[in-house]
Length: 265
Image (cartoon, rainbow, N blue to C red; front, side):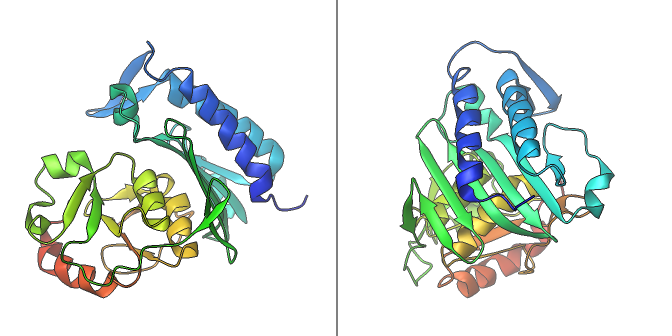
């Protein structure tokens, strides 16, 4: 079977977006998988749809999703779908339009296709390896800002609340934004200069966004400045730094003195 293209994947993600929006700002069931980690009917509906439709597109691919029990058989697969049916569920529950559906196709540990959709703002970000990145069909690239002081950094509201950005508040302009997948997409499209998280992330949080940033001309890696490799047995990464490339060495230098205080869970 031929490898899927963005033209194959995008309509499926749009369909999942329509399913999610049927619940948005309406009444739906919410439960906590763990403290401060909600899941809703919308997450499950989108996950079910994506698993079926993407599975039909490439039956030989493995599956890794936040809302599906992990199957270690994925580790033997050349291809893997890495999916977060709603990244930013807390924002979704609160009616804040800063959540996203994140879908990536990984081949031999590296993402080759990525689609991130914010269905509340109707922004669809897409990338294919070696081909570039687009928003709603228009090719985009990272910002050109080359000086870190005063640059716009998208930051998690929960991480700001915990004080994780206090050391950097005098240096940059922080913009509170929900989903990490959405933050990465905003960096890729030049809407923000950088984003970072000094706590662990799951592969499904960042896989699609990492390809978006790279294909848009930016740089994306973990807190130790290592590139990402996906489809690991333990699908967590050691934080994330994403930026336009011009700011990368300055961000690494700014974060280095605070490496010991990075969150472990």
